[in-house]
Image 1 (cartoon, rainbow, N blue to C red):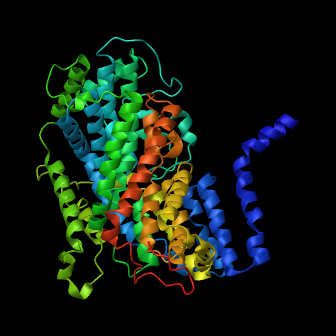
Image 2 (image 1 turned 30 degrees about the vertical axis):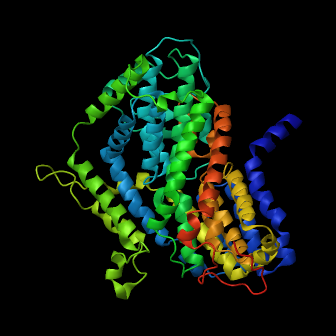
Image 3 (image 1 turned 90 degrees about the horizontal axis):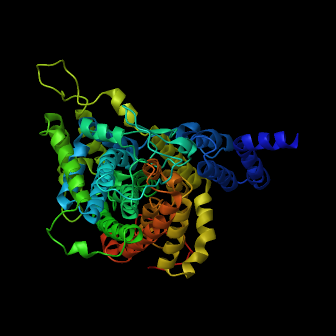
Length: 588
């Protein structure tokens, strides 16, 4: 009887958490009863549900629409306005571009070209794949970038593993690659994972891989990943390359504002809470974060090479020479793959042209040091944003014909293809975060938190930022990146105001650190995709992830203390931020 009761309680633990959490928090709205306490009830309830994901992220994001009107914090119509912002138009335009890139295979051409440029020595090969994945992650969702690159990586690894006979063995036998004609990788136990930071799918039960060429598909069928004989060095190279792909997607994503969800959430939050702030745009974010990404990518590559392969970096100084059997096998696969793509199709050329125009227009809209093209519309100052550009060019993909007049009219992408790529979960999650932030402002909770955090002004500013970065980096390992950003931004901006520090000094580094979820396969979907291939264990990822987390936090702090300060005027308290009377006036 007791055994059945225990089993029943365990099976219904999710429902128990859903019910018990609001019951335990009831003293806030019932006993204290202030608007601040009622808003705190909503905030803590949403944070708990987001971290544990006992109900879908997007449904948790709907709670402000239910609770704020009930508590009298905001009208229902006022809450509804927060759920669709400029951010969503930007996301739609970017996903249109990403859909076309994936449909017409431009990503494979870019990735293969980048890899072949660096050579096939194991060290350079790892760097080449990491660079290719990081570049793709700058423009598409991190999960998409990994699923684009990993089939190519897997084909190369299979050639390397069978190029040389070695000691037999299996790594991670409980979760192996299961490829079918549709190139579906079954995620097994990962089907219940709770981390979807870039959330392309609500239930992460499988990952749709990009089709590989027929020769490579045949090779993969004849030589499944767990079957080839592996010597230790070959196995270690597989580990380093696979983990490098997962990490490089997150590293590349922070480089641009549309690169990952936390960046977009931060940008829209800033415009909502500080409407007069015009410091953040595509150009200066790129100037800030591109050096961070390059530093992180290079140091991560060195760290992974040292951790898994060894400390012999003599290949950095070696040029030419006889190639090993493994290098020849890898080169043959890459050459065959690139040749199989054939010449660039007209669809690839058009997609690449739109991509280049979009980036150019983003960079030149309002660069800051010179008037941008937005100055051509002086009477509409502030009306045109990056979302305007993304949406204008994104619509073209639904209009421009994919083929010539000899075939029936078909647009570059269809609505069905766009829908399959659109991360609706992220769109709703972000809307819930904006509603929560507005509710905290309306209820006075933000001001109360600011007063509570005022004593932190006695610490050096860099110490405060370091503590915030470490906390965020820790939380994002167990909560989705987007949810972590949404939870912490309304807390950290009042902190910056309380200690009279430029809010960007606190918000930028913590936003970047929410993308540093490197420790576990369940920390984010890219990690899970790579883990599913069966080359790495959880301990491999934990060991590697600790070092990369340290590299990431230190790189961000270095940027904030050096080139970030003059770029965003971090040493001065801005006019667009409110001055709270009687608070500590410590400046960086």
